[in-house]
Image 1 (spheres, rainbow, N blue to C red):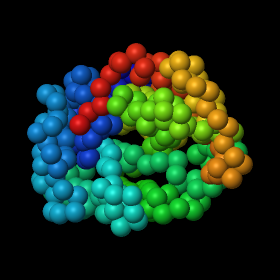
Image 2: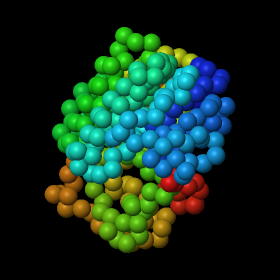
Image 3: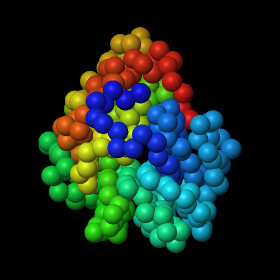
Image 4: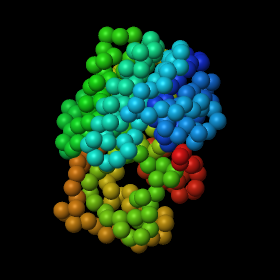
Length: 294
């Protein structure tokens, strides 16, 4: 659970999690353990664990009634595909439909948090924080940014605070692609810096921001304490797995932004990561701890 020392705004609230997948479920379980009533909207609610009241919902159709008295809302949706139409339906369409459902049912939550991505920074390299201009270049970042602006503009001047949490690359239980690539010798070592966050720390960041007593900022970066090059990560994994040393990538393969995102603003609220770097996080995964929620 989160080791944050910040006060909790409401000792018991009704929390609606829209898009209760792996991250949303983990956050929901932690909110339920803290004494909140948690309702999860997803297409297959029967997959949700005890502690989260599942309700069937499809963001491309009319949404079910919002639970009366809902105080906190988390939008943690995922696209059904990897094309712009799928992203737009999930993120821009999803945010719009949730806000419409709240208005339709006369529910005015205290906070709505949208889980976004550092993809909104596009090809920006170097040190990045919340003051860095979001200038997305690919469709995924552009759609995410559009969804962010929609949420914040619609909620501006209302009693509901909008929060955007931009997560770095999520890794965690059941997310074994990089580990598998290292095992098979497919992983390549590049000097490009990347910033990531363990699934559990992403969940505690969601819980912390949605429930802390202090008034939140509009935007936070959710990443661990230190950026690392791809080479550092894959070579570490190779040593732990007893796998061959990953080959250095050709210069042409070292594409993409080379940036280090800062979690200083999030840490200043009292949140602390359990896995401050990739090393602690991947050791936890390699030990077999944790599960990925279906």
